[in-house]
Amino acid sequence: MKKLYILLIAIFVAGASIAQCTGDRYRKHVFLDYDVTTGINFGSNIDLQGSTVQLLMDVYEPQGDVETARPLMILAHGGNFLGGTTNGADVLPLCENFSKMGYVVASVDYRVGFNNFPIPGPDSVDATETVVRTVHDIRAAIRYFKMDYSTQGNTFGIDTNMIVIGGVSAGAIAAMHTVYLDDISEMPTYIDTTQAGLGGGVEGNSGNPGYFSGNLMGCINIAGAIRDTTWMQPGDPALLSLHGDADGTVPYGTDIISLLGVVDIMEVHGSGSVAPDATAKGIDNCLYTHPGQDHTPHVSNAAYLDTTLTLMRNFMVHLVCGDPMECTYNGDILTVENYKINKDISIYPNPAINEINIDAGDHMITGVRMYNVLGKLVYSSTAPFGHTTVIQRDQFPSGIYMIEINTPEGKGLKKAILR
Image (cartoon, rainbow, N blue to C red; front, side):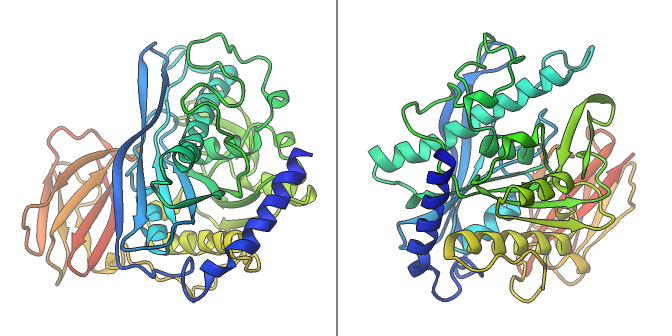
């Protein structure tokens, strides 16, 4: 009965929101810029070390918008459940672009870490408990917005009946479990809920009690997976999945997932397995496969970012405006404003040992930011550079990095390897 109620509410809201969907709103960049409020405390809970963690989020809104009943996207970053940031290169372009289309977008933090990491290594129980902690934290974020709507005057101008949960990599795993692990009867019985910070059933105790964290419109899964597809039931929220079929981090199909490519943990069901199961159950869904691509190609390639944004846009206007579901990329609608000068930027040597040279061609470099593989900002400078600049190796360890280059004409994003 609950599933049917949620489905009927979603249908009603899609029809009721058509008035907002005239013109290009929710389909293109109709706002020149966005406003972001960082470090909003939406809850707290106990981490694996027994310390109280304050849960923070950044909220992006279209600059100058007067609409007061806007759809809300809540996005969770990646990072192997070991790290990641709310402004990492995996989620930041999504927040920036969708806020310019008229959405409110919240990039949320969540508790990370595993029991038994690094020695002897987490098992399937440890990993499941970690995912449940993230579910508790994301549900606290949902409840925060509903609390704000009810008691604080709807600070962010949202419609609480139009909430979509999404994420990238580990964040996508967290998002899928938040949306589909939604009944106490589905909670795995082997989870030790007596651990501090793990009680509270499906809802958890991460903050804002007394508000319903369900009634969600949909789920956006970028390179994620789910532990058990039986948690997905007819009438559940719609699903968009984007995944490279050569993903070596999160399986595209049904396979064993490992931590950092070293510790095998458990069998999970990636996008390639989830989509046909959702279809068989009548769940409104799209699967877009990046042929031959590894994990999260949108992070390092502007073309894949454009594809990702366009498919996400198609999914959102289907839910919000009632447009037909469009599961293919036609390339005729969304032009990525971010990273549009990639072709003009060169980075060398690559791999590098002592320094990374950046040449922006005819563009003047106004800022440089570098992120590690977990999405953590490790270097930032806004000094005037001219057309070229150099990042010294200094203390940076060997590994893969993403470098964002700002210019007056736009941004570029390049992958760099340090050896």
